[in-house]
Length: 122
Image 1 (tube, rainbow, N blue to C red):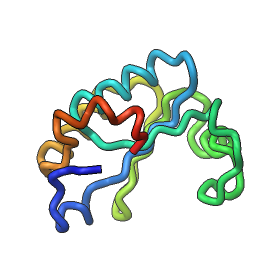
Image 2 (image 1 turned 180 degrees about the horizontal axis):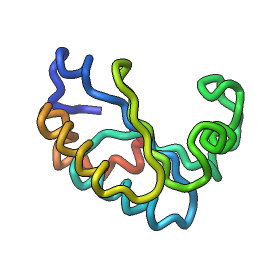
Image 3 (image 1 turned 60 degrees about the vertical axis):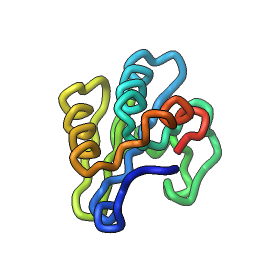
């Protein structure tokens, strides 16, 4: 991934994970907003990613999400080591707040690279 993030900004910028499922219009809308704005995120489809992972305490992505955040998709998890946030469903207020943070830090994905985001699965 190439961004205009400086070393100082990289320490304070959060990682963004979007837990999604198939045929979920709210998931698609949230991801589309992030892609359009150039917010780097990792997508984990809980219906397709079915192997247990160490990062989830040897649980599947779905088991992890249901246990920690509930069943409503998408679940967006924002972490930077200092503060954490998460939300479920379509939350335009939270999406816009996160977009503004990345724009303020100059850490969005360059416009020419945004379309490839989905296939690269940052």
